[in-house]
Length: 305
Ligand SMILES: Cc1cc2nc3c(=O)[nH]c(=O)nc-3n(C[C@H](O)[C@H](O)[C@H](O)COP(=O)(O)OP(=O)(O)OC[C@H]3O[C@@H](n4cnc5c(N)ncnc54)[C@H](O)[C@@H]3O)c2cc1C
Image 1: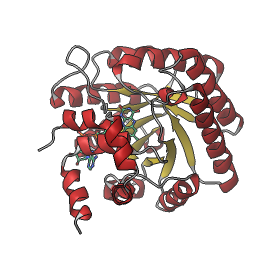
Image 2 (image 1 turned 180 degrees about the vertical axis):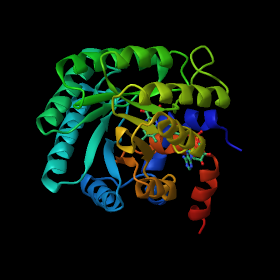
Image 3 (image 1 turned 180 degrees about the horizontal axis):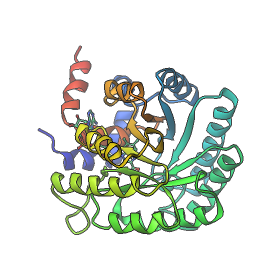
Image 4 (image 1 turned 120 degrees about the vertical axis):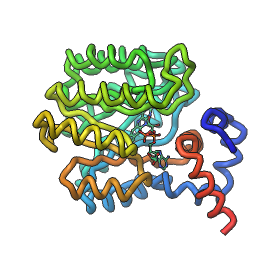
């Protein structure tokens, strides 16, 4: 059986990426987790989510771009997405990755690119979430976020933290002082034991600890997980502390636990679905398989059906 770390390793293999993305049958199998290749397809998916009471966040799939010219087309893509959200009236914000905007090339370029998107979103009354990537870029991502946050409002730009990192509780205490809107997730990358809890139980315990800090802060945050235990802990804590259902939102990924997504929305909780779309779906898709190797069987079954 392929392990989580093997799948995450494969997610970074360029040769496999080229093979998989040109193989149309493979592409078809991704439709469970990826909303399509174009903005229009993502809009159709988001309309459907909105009709079930869920909001959304666009994610244009293209991490770790290799040239400044490529980052320019990413910025244009996001400006187009923001314009289309305004034009269609769908209920969605956007999520960006700084490597997509050039972080691996030059941090200043990534900041300038992100700034253009945040500025446009702020003008439109929309919101940009800066995703968190591997631990090699945690600090620079926080630094760029803080710079953006010093120029834009609480409701214009937010950040993500990962409960598998030892540093996260301190980062959260620091970010809450600004204050900042935070999405809490467990973390999706392969991290060494020097920086991240190797045991799932510790990651979960830290998740609950950080969730409690966030909910007690009085700022609107996103609790991103498909884990029924984390969701139950959040609901119980909010009820115990008298924190209203509208004081935070749950967030899940497109195509994962749709039943739970709709149930939480029916129960009156905010539920935002992260909607990835675009041609460069390979690393994202492989990380989703890594989280739940049972999904490989889902993919294989469909391949041979
Ligand atoms: C909205 C959102 C945004 C995110 N943004 C980031 C980010 O910026 N940076 C980052 O590092 N990570 C991000 N992630 C990914 C996150 O870090 C986890 O890798 C992912 O959510 C799986 O963790 P979990 O909390 O669902 O719990 P897990 O402990 O992985 O899983 C708990 C249970 O959830 C269900 N489940 C989980 N994953 C799957 C799956 N792929 N298919 C089917 N069922 C599944 C299963 O029932 C499983 O037993 C994001 C996740 C979400 C939901």
